[in-house]
Length: 576
Image (cartoon, rainbow, N blue to C red; front, side, top):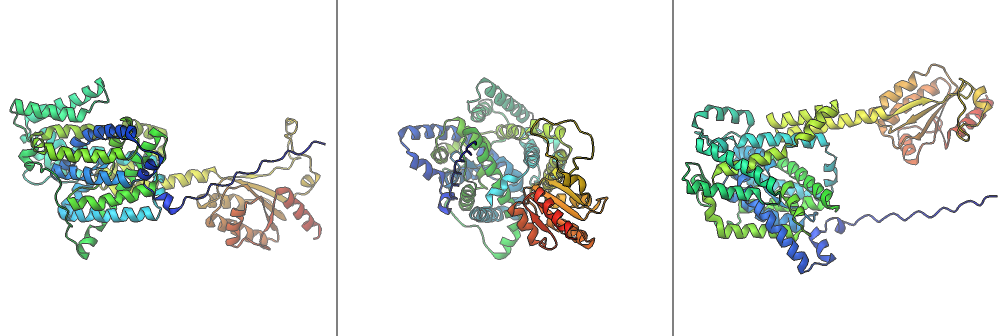
């Protein structure tokens, strides 16, 4: 006799991480691994590289939001330092992000800058709460067409927000935040376009493209801003600069102060605060996922959200904007050879040094050059190839993409995300429902069949051929509410009236209460006809759900296998 092979014992499951493990910042993890001078040198170089990229971007984003450039620098310094120090990603770089331009501008337009600061602090508290409730894990379930749709929508809005700077237009009043009113207002003042501004903007965009083609590692944005500043000063170009609009950029950060606080004000800004928190969580975790993909590391999503929350509580105290993880700067940090979060902390300190030393020089920077920087950022954000791929790949995903994109552009960012997620969920449920198959087990004596390979053909069972009173149906796939109606309709259309119905659920990985109620209806109808229902092969979890909804003896009987159900049915029929 052949000796039965011994099965190796299953490895014991890894213990679940403790609360302390989940919320330990990656900075602590990196320091525990051993951190010395070589690691510090690598992080310092990466931090300096990112700071050079972040300097013009932070000012440009602040100006696009309708505030002075020092607000963007304060966000990158305070928010960026805290996100790196307390975050759950080794490589995340925090600061002001282009994705927030339209939302920040609209919030300032509705509530004033003081109301926006309060909304940002509330958003920070919400992010801390989401993190500690461990809800950050669920943000990753946002469908890809939704992220592509709102990224493309934001890109369109950012580009539209830079028409004024790129063309040198002059508005009598403030620029509207919404797209259609903005375009209408800009069109009405089209005669004020400045030829020198247009030429400088076009040259700046061309120089950015040229520098990147020569060497992608060069800080193209900073090079272009410096070149445009020198050109406008040397040739005396009649273009608007940071100094002409905002005055001199202050040296250093302002003293911390709280925005005006009252219950009525909190309730007024709460919807915008929730929108800021939602977008901040999505943008930050997407950035962390990008860093994970580039490095093979894994971030702690809930710890990252807590750090984002702390950054957004602190940034408004210094007059800063909403802070979040930034994908482009984070990718730059990775490519620059960063080891851990120290690079992000040093990036913030380098920006502070730049602000202390060179702030007065920023007054000479042409706004057209910063507009060119954001125009290129918007072009890169659009994810054009992904957009076109989704449109041609799937009709359902195209609907989700276009709904998110159009609502983001013409209505509201959070509305676009919400509708996109709902449509994506319906699409997923529809597809999962289509995976559920219901098949009737055929008797071995019904039709002529070719011989199967040896060992693959089922053994002859005279009971199955001789007993037409037992019908077996096999259900395969997830048995949940999206599939419940189809399964119920198929089973209710059973042509014959057997004395025994066997449902094989051995290929059902899970079931929900709606599907269980559909099977309960089948069970009651089967019992009403005087027949018996057997459920075979149900896993313990599926059986618990079914039993909870009332599928119990004597309404239904359970068997380990279809063969066992047949045997039990045969014995029951023999006693009749």
